[in-house]
Amino acid sequence: MSGFVSFVSSGPGDPELLTLKAVNRLQGADAVLFDDLSSGPILAHARSGADLVGVGKRAGRTSPKQDHVSRLLIDYASSGAKVVRLKSGDSGMFGRLEEEILALRAAGIGYEIIPGVTSAMAAAAAAGIPLTRRLTARRVQFVTGHDVTGALPDDLNWAALADPTATTVVFMGKRTFPELSRRLQEAGLSADTPALLAESVSTPAQKLVRGTLATMASLIEAEAADGPALILLGPLAPEE
Image (cartoon, rainbow, N blue to C red; front, top):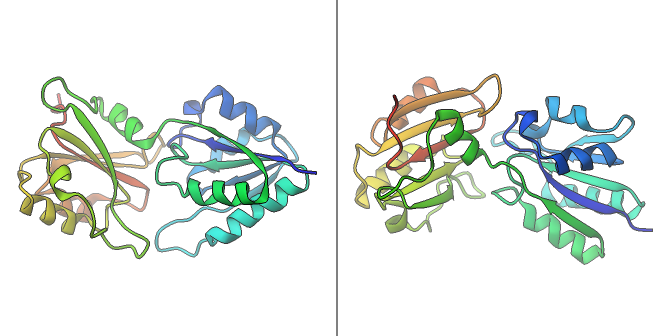
């Protein structure tokens, strides 16, 4: 007997940003394997009696290995359970989704992917700005700020990232931003390029800090807390 896995995107943290389909799957699940950033009030939508299993990974903290998470998904589904794998933001955005899909395919277990509000969109909305701007920001690019070792990836496309007509969103980049800033300026991006730190977006701990490519590293050191954060760079709309 085989169950089914729903990869449910929980959005950036505010439970009101869940989709109706996400709530439906949570209410019908026998087991919910959730990320740290998908816990709290979002789990209130899970049905009473469902197994709630924390499998979140956070930088610098002891976290479940990916093989263990995939094994849990397979074990639950193989018992006939309806499983929700609850991922923060949008599950397809820097969320290790592919590894879990491949494990399910190898085990012959069916799955679906339910999209959600990615934190990049939520950050722009919280700041009251668009991610694109007519004539000045015609392209948006998402990039991770660290590789599997925690360092800044060395194979980034620096010419693309230094494009002054693109909005760049850096995920998980607080610790590596000083080096990222240096490399971008070496690649030709102006030190005066607007920058926005968006931390714990859509939650009560939300913090938005504006600066420039040159000043953002010191602002992160002085003002950032321990929450998940994005850094937006590019021709962002000015603060009113």
